Amino acid sequence: MTSTNETSMYQWPRDAGGADSAALEQWLAGHGWEVDPTVFMAGARGPAVQVRRVGAAWQDGEPGLLILPGEVVEYNGEQMRIASRPVEAVSLAP
Image 1 (cartoon, rainbow, N blue to C red):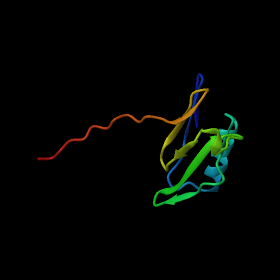
Image 2: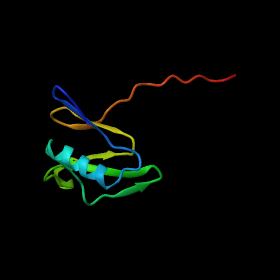
Image 3: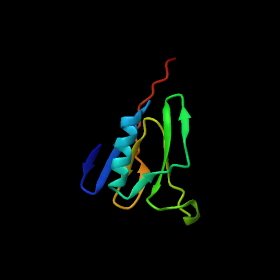
Image 4: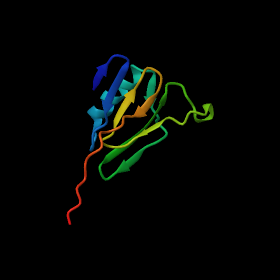
């Protein structure tokens, strides 16, 4: 977890466990967000997590954010989003 100016970032690890979930919930709570308890997705690389603003409901028109294993989430003081990753160069072998 890192913080810079108004932007705060959190990396949801692959193969996340209970301690990772608790750390994510604490980080989210500090920004007024929570894990959506109605959504659970297990995957080959670990669980995906759906998050939403505290107290938000699907009827509010705000769908929340799905965080996949290995993704970095960024909070900019107003909204959560998946942080962009640097583009990796790919070389094609002849």
